[in-house]
Length: 305
Length: 245
Image (cartoon, rainbow over all chains, first blue to last red; front, side, top):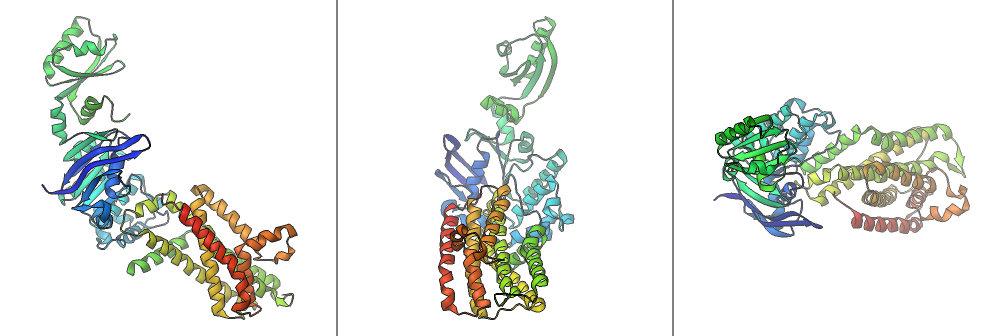
């Protein structure tokens, strides 16, 4: 084990809300670790506790072997953080902002190298106020990288970005992975988690309810595939539950998702039911199960509600 | 040390790019001294050259724009935009951050004062006849008191929107009731106790006594307690209510 982040029994309460409830995990060097969950699940609180922005009510955190409760100043030299929203002075130039932040650290990378790494070299002399959303997000990433950190925190790095800008950020994260950086990212996009993360902790109501590699998370829930169908004759959830080989059913009005390990027998049955007139199928599609299905299975909720 | 110089240079550049701040801290005071200079160049008031009387008032006004208006609006903006929050993730210490802000504003005040005195002396026959060192010492005390007031306002003001109007109200009150441009004995009598309690009045009186009447520290001393009182009171408010996010 070569854990660079150790979190044990982390708890943080805001009034009646347990924003983090006995959260524990280890992150190994070079790993991309994702916290996935809906808004309000406690992802941001958890990373902010590790970053030292907030103090936990109980539990302990070690970053690179340093206890953050008494060594946060040392930890700050070793980590880089991209907040969900980073705002700077409007009238600062990109190059100046990188220089400024670099000056706060004992060691920092050259500004040109940082800007090249996030594809902002041609924006060096632009004012922050003139940047697009995607460029701002890349600047935030650049500021997190000025000290060549051991551990990088990305809090919802692509929320609100268009698909092209999102892919740009993913490319940068993948290049950082190749350079062996340890990255902790929070997201509520399952594609993002599946594509980038080596391991994912699924969070709901302040708790980590599952933690594994994306593939294993899906395999462990016995969710090989998901059959999505729309009916028009008002059948109930139980109707599908009674079918053999169906492990779980979720309903959203006339829309049902059947989770199964054995796709073809279920399809055959559905075809029979449709031919006999017991089921009026308006549409049907089969897809591989995703983390979204895992989340639904574990919590009965959708990720993006 | 390089960081410190770099930070001050950058803050100065940022300051020059903020057109509105630049107007109030520099263009407006320069405009005032030129205007008053042209209007009353050779006039006297109670035997004192009018411009010699007005110069300290214009300096105090300029100091207040820097220390009160731009501190309050700047700090509230940095807090509300989350700039303080972002900085707190870096090894930069909060004390250092506030220290830089104070140093920066103090340097701005010195620049403003130098420019205003230079213009007044070069074109309009104004002068600081008294002890320059004493003038500088009293001005520094005034600057620190106004800075404390600026930080106290920043601590008490809730959001970015109200920062500018509220600090402008404080600024104008201190400017007009504090005798920057005309003696307060021309004020309605009921306002006098209010004026007497203002730090701007005592700073104006002290600077005028030094610049025009060439008095020493003993005569100036009675103006000091009110300035110290404001410094203490505002410092307590600022420390007690200051929020980083």
